[in-house]
Image (cartoon, rainbow over all chains, first blue to last red; front, side, top):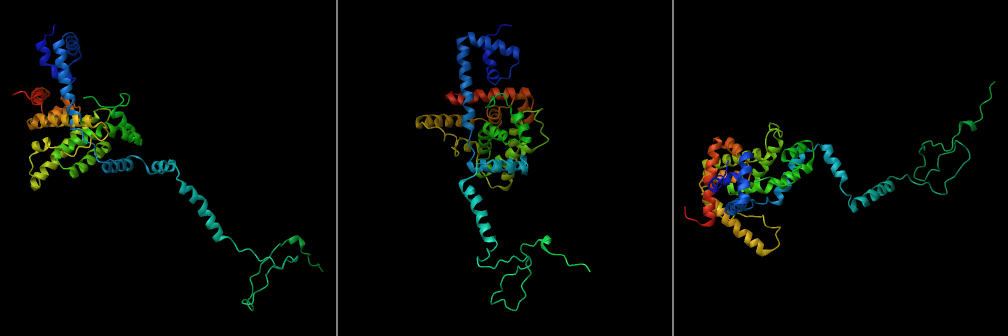
Length: 159
Length: 195
């Protein structure tokens, strides 16, 4: 079938909209490539219609985009996925500092008191209780066993 | 108008990936469709606050709606069909409450707060694009409501004749003839030719 210019003009919008069947489209494209007038007309149509999209577009505000992304993240990424993603984030410097400083502070606060250097050291396995202070005279100190070793105790003779 | 983006990953494939928990798929879908959808909604309702809400609502609903099967239908058609319905619902409700009496075609020709040109550095180019955009919007605003809707769905949403026909409940042939008339009228308005 031979296609004439008039026929091409009638179906130009379908060609630009890409709504023709493959056979008709091929014939029209062939005609347009050979006919200067129809090629010019095709270019005009394409340009005019292509201007609609950009003229109609509007960039959504940033806060709307951020809000939408959070909603989508909550809807589609499971909690463990979000946690994993958070862990993959680069660790800020203050986080590194905190990771070292906080355990150090906690350790120094909870550290057991160091016994005074003049505390009596006895070889006796059962001598453990430190010398009571003046304030604690009269109180029974809690028993403490230092260096206890059961093998060092001589068993009582059996009669 | 074909969808923007790499042809290897279709919108439908991206939606499937997103439903599998891949958030980067959403970023790509957003990059492709957000400006068009937001522009469509904003120019439909003419109110930025309402447009912000409707835009988010439509996007999230389409992504979450499990009744939509990405392997059987096009994402764009679903997205714009829902957007159109939500906008119409809002307009009906708004008219019932009589909170809004502005004439939409005039609003369309007005300059809404367009934020599309922020990335363009050259002021002359910006000005030229702005001028062209104004001319195009004025030409579209001069079309009858039915023709305008068809033209926008075709060129902004990228819907096919069949998809538009299903959305409006009219035969494909009617879509074709109306679009032909719409395009002719639009081009006349654009070039300033008399009717």
